[in-house]
Image (cartoon, rainbow, N blue to C red):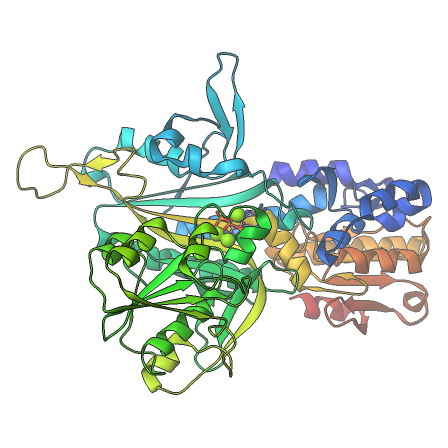
Length: 581
Ligand code: ATP
Ligand code: MG
Ligand code: MG
Ligand code: MG
């Protein structure tokens, strides 16, 4: 680290300030600076920018667009990314996860074995080598790591195992958006865990959730953990970590009473039909089934906000009480049962002509098997239309409403998904034969399937999401944990007293604590006006800016600007250290 520090100082120093870090030597093309020279390019870059974080990342010289959804990360962005990664590395090491690096270019073989070569659809970047073999650019690494572990693990003695990596992922997103928020190339931390039993995997899951909370607490932006679990059969668990933000594409429903939160998109295992229709992924009809107390089969055909529909559905099935209705999605379960009557609820976001079964079938809104079931058994079918979604006062919290019989509404918030945890069970270990010899077994040669979990954090997305959550009209407001530099000193002139004091200040701050060691920067571009450099510093968003100007020569006091509050303190040189200690 020392050599790194020395190297960095040698490259970034100017003659006036010896080996101290100076802005004149750093590649930081803020557009304020660029605008004098290359204003045309600036406008090209800023055109079509709809998110403030994206505009700020361009203007503050953090990223440049290469092509749709693909960006170059410039030095200051990389410094912030490094800090996010350090926080993550610390917490991963803390739970015994080891870092490795898997290839980005993946053979299709394992993907064909798990069925994802097909199901991944057009989001997968596919390519062929010179022998015409199929490859893809990794969008995620479950197949690759399971295959690796399957080859190396033979016995329970080698488990548990926790492996993670930080690297680039590729997804040919339908709509790349807002710079790093939704890229086609992006940086992800992905952790995979391997346990011998479901209970052990569940304990691992809880440990990782705890580590994730630490990570997001340290980053310092408020976050919400949303239940992304269907709560139905299967026993898999999933949570999403979100920053609440208008720019987010997800809708999180939060209970005003107990804080329960769920992702509308994931809570019932599928995208709302309206969203699917929008992005063209509507290949199969989406249903939720419920069986009511008096053995009525309830089929809910989903429109937007289908979590809400389910609560309505429960209420409808049970005389306005939310209890005693089982939600199931297993078609076999449905087909093997006899029901007295069938209620079909069609969300009012659909066209109003969907009033009979044939139209539902021809619009692919009802499964053919269900259709046959209904006809073969001559069930009494009632189609309820349009009244699922519109009941007031809104939608109920499943926890509070169930336990108290009072109605607590869920409030929708736009949010950015920054992390996702998932208990996988044997979803990948089964097709890829990741097995182990257990400690105790019935007969020789009995093998257990490894219980897995996977856990992602969108590192490059977090960078943009932080800015989306933390900026003002002047620029970025970095939480100090991940600011590219923490302190920017601006000497107002080349006068020798100012220069000398700047050097002393730099030396003082960098030696005050280990934490500020590599965090101080001198804006030595004295050919630019003070006002210009102050604006530039506010745009980039260093948490602290210290100005050594005329006032210092007159009164011996320096101006310390706090970026988050925009407060200015006039402080004697000797007192500066008290602020940063
Ligand atoms: P989204 O719903 O936003 O498409 P996802 O659910 O497909 O994300 P996961 O497969 O859960 O994403 O990947 C783990 C994490 O990677 C996400 O929580 C997110 O933070 C990040 N991520 C996913 N897709 C992108 C992308 N296109 N650009 C940047 N980060 C992404
Ligand atoms: Mg996605
Ligand atoms: Mg998602
Ligand atoms: Mg996800």
